[in-house]
Length: 114
Image 1: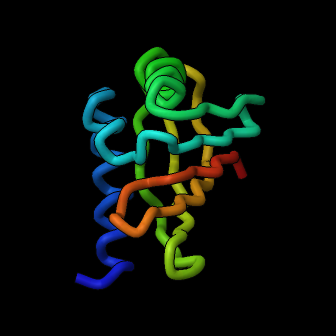
Image 2: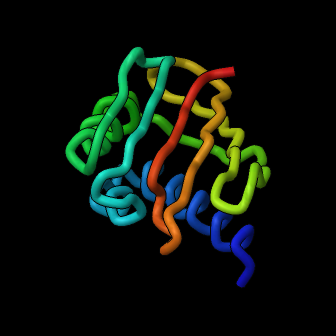
């Protein structure tokens, strides 16, 4: 499997886990010290506790459903996923820049809305 295929599978796994509101499955995709930086929320979420808070607040609580629109490789360890989000808040299109550690776990997501 190529790195691009592995990255795409991790993005799919992330969206499947968030769509299923499975916080534990989401956390299993991240390094323990991973970061989600999301200017659309005005916050940065650090480590598994922060990521758990992010998923519970913005996915579980808003009944968010995500649909992958595209994935583009940015470099050897980063991809950009364009995602459609729907939920109690309405409809948004977002960009998720995912950075992977050498083991294939998510080390960082820089998220924002289009």
